[in-house]
Length: 153
Length: 377
Image (cartoon, rainbow over all chains, first blue to last red; front, side, top):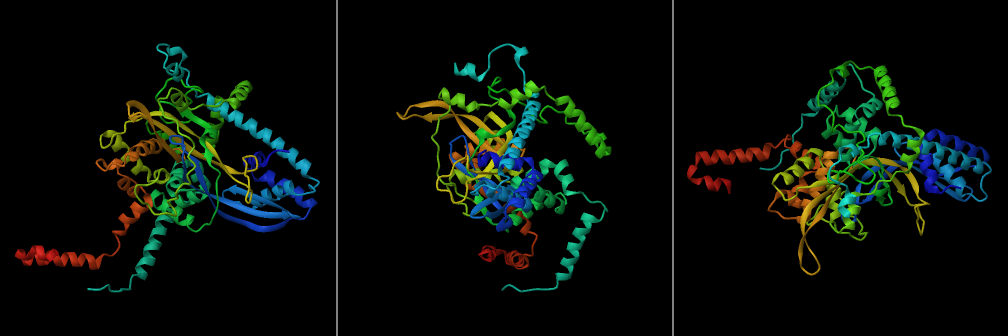
């Protein structure tokens, strides 16, 4: 099973359609109770700066949250933006991972998330390769070695 | 003379609001929020940066409602923000994990990971492309497909790119002790949205205020600091643009871990580490030249603002009022867009009583010149 950090990243970055589909599979197999209906709020982003290594607040972001239960297991769905339905589906999937015993479709859900993760990685690699096209090649200019490594030596 | 309540303006105000709305709709054209997001992303990001709220659809709607006025759109964003509950504070974002799509150094030609220009106008001709006036959505789609084909990479290049990590220029300078290393400082940041400004301001306040400051004010004051009204002349050690992940700890967890965190999404940021030659005093009291680092981090794409922020970060550490650019009160009080435009804007509101009092005093000083000083008293 993937970690929650990795799983939620794949689900959020893959967009709501996948989450709705997987939540639908889970809800068809077990009852889901909404504890906190979808709502909008803010998350304050805190950052570590690299000059003095201290922390500061960069500013807030709009987010949506929903909390549900499958049996005694609580699931939380959180996502940037105003999409309560997306947050609800994320909460259902999160609850399914926390539920004991695990709902029947969980193995399929996990497999689908891992597959979506591979698609996401391929997309990111393609985007990164495109960006690398704009990498400067100084090789032909010759002259003095002005690299940071040369200075270190 | 006391305050006198007046009425009678309601009808005029209602008509004025109607006239404002007519200005928006009068031409019979409407622009979709999605179009604003797609076509004017940097305008939307500026509104989010100064509004201190990452919410692209809301910011684009604010731009539409404000008829393109950044000042008004930022005001709308700040007002909207105040209606929402803060549900979470994120885990500390480590910008080392940024998904970088542009990074350059003005200090070194060759840097590990390379100079990656990414999308930039730095090398473009600043000539108006008049053919854009007749561009259609079909033209846009065709051009996008053409560019995607031109920029497509080989699968091997994709695999290599996926593994690429870009170490910081600062790391090397810290290795040779030209830039001082600091231990992690986990002092809880002060939040200027909850705590009034007080001076000297803690570092967290300075950085938060600069980051959400009025873009052109931050740039102008940063420029002044470099030009001679301050002591900071920076070299951009590294400038990075990319996205950073926003994550939160699992609520109620006693020992939260990264693996157990929730990922909410990613926001685009521009980060700058400026290097400024400075005099350092070591433990034995010896002076030596070293490089100090000015730090800038802004939401969105605005590199000028991020660089100016890094200049002012360094400048304000001096907190020396001989130069306005080093005076925390001067800089931090005046760069907030809503504070500045709000105060300037209030000058349009009725000041009948105070003005008449001033006028009365001035008239009396003319009528009784020998008692002019007393009229002011």
